[in-house]
Amino acid sequence: MPATSFNSRLLHEIEHGKKIAADAEDVWNWSSPAGKVRADRRANYICTCGNFTANGRLLEIGCGTGIFTEKVFHITRAKITAIDISPELLELAKKKLPEVDFRIADAMATNFPDDSFDGVYGSSVIHHLEYEPAFREIYRVLKKGGRMVFAEPNMLNPQIFLERHVPFLKKMLGVSPDESAIVRWKTKSLLRSIGFSNVSIFPYDFLHPATPRFIIGFVNSIGMIAEKVPLLREIAGSVIISAGK
Image (cartoon, rainbow, N blue to C red; front, side, top):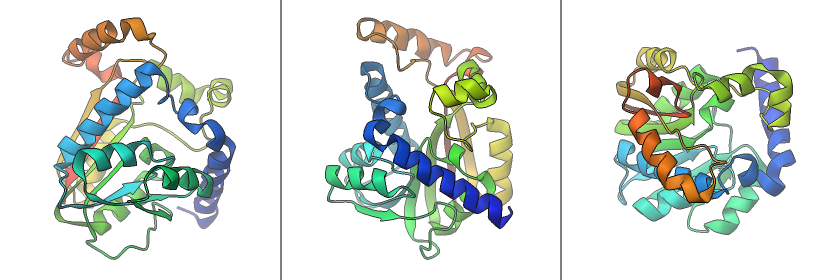
């Protein structure tokens, strides 16, 4: 990737973080009643797919305001280092969780030593990055036998596809200039080419964050049925990416 493109992407993300810091959790749709249900389910997937425990040293990439830092910490009690490129978002995260080592760092060039972490995870961050250098960096800092887990938007979801390809929707919905979404078979092939093993990428989540509180349970139940239907599941809103070293 050309240095100019690399630097431009970083600058865009830093500016985006500054722009949304005051209401980031609303922009990301985690603060609504349905958003909170989705966040809890996502955090549980991250911990179970990563086999994360209290004995592990974990790296969170793109921690933002610390929503998933806090959830993963309370589930696992692991030692967590959390990084983000946005100083404004990191300041908010630090106030939530003083037990965590928060640092400003670029996910594609972290400066951590090789084989530093038992697990690496993140929520909705990989799609902001250049996939290959990001995954190569994750592989480098991950210990042998460790796992990485990321929850990301699914490009085959109709809303996400339109958000990423229709400029006025992208701007209206607060999508940052460089973000994309995951096409799972391409991502699986890339991970295997880098050296990851036991690669699993599965679509899930039909619960829209705008779902009214009184029908969340019903919509969630129908969504979990849809996740088991072979073709229908492909348009779910998110994917879980997990792989080992």
